[in-house]
Length: 416
Image (cartoon, rainbow, N blue to C red; front, side, top):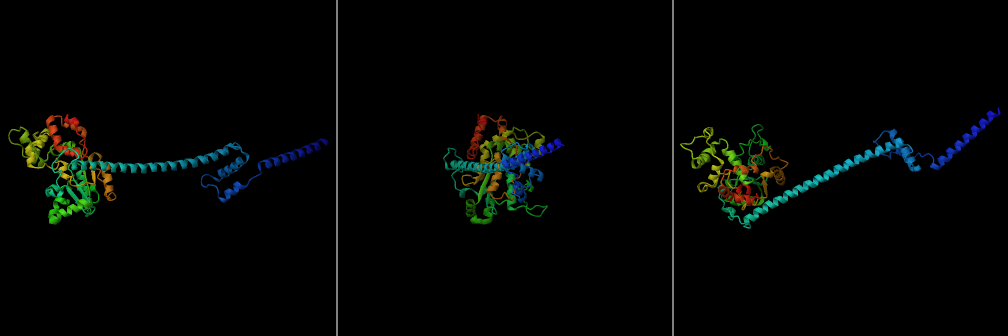
């Protein structure tokens, strides 16, 4: 009996001792804190990132860690807190990366525009230097006034009064697609399917855009405005945006030859091809009457005969060259027309995009993305391989003003 009572007393004393230890411990750590749960109740914590169980556990441990200074009290629950922090940090990092990319894109875009503008200034300044006589190259018509240019030589200046644009088209320099753009802007051609003017340049039939009746050119002003025509031209040249596109002169010649004499073309065969064959082809007997018959018989002009024709003094006496190989300075008169934009076929896509923005019509249409002319500068050496050096140098002198005016390098590989 005494033993049993002794055990009871010992158990009681032990219990009192444990209670005392617990009281002392919670005194040390500051007791239970209800603030985390009050915070959760009042919504002071972020919502939506995890389940209530994880949130509550994380809050309790977080408070205890602050109060005890321990970072390892409950490792598993602490890791859930770390997980939430990493998720938020990752989201924040992704947003920052997007902002950085957006800033870089805008900066690159501004830089690209500045480069384009700077390049345009270089191109325009080069023309001004040439036309002012600062450079040594002399060429016909450099110093004449615009009023002295005959009307027939103004037939390549297409006018769009609605958008106040003047475009000088140069054959073999994307002129088909630019004419399509001008047709859409001027609403000068009705689509048979819709009964309304075309709104998409790519939908305009390419064979129709070369119909001169579709375009108002300076050459037609005399018929429309009579004695007022030159005065109106001067006003439009002063206030309208004027542009043209150019190309390496020798490459343009190769492209013209391939297009007009590399396959049967009845008009060009009768007017030019037959002349070349008679003069320089040593063809015995009469020539076939049609291009189809000539090609079937293996009779067609060579590139060498074409170049000989261009250099023949008799050719110059006969005409000022067909538009497909006429020099750009004779087509577009850059010394008399102060162009606001000079594009290049070699940079057609970027130049076209920038020009449409400058014209403030980029919201109306896009430049056609049709097949480009494939004649490349790298072909020059092969095409001129059979042409004597003396003729190559004569040809360069004939087209030197275009090389110089529009900044194309002298083709040393062809001339030496």
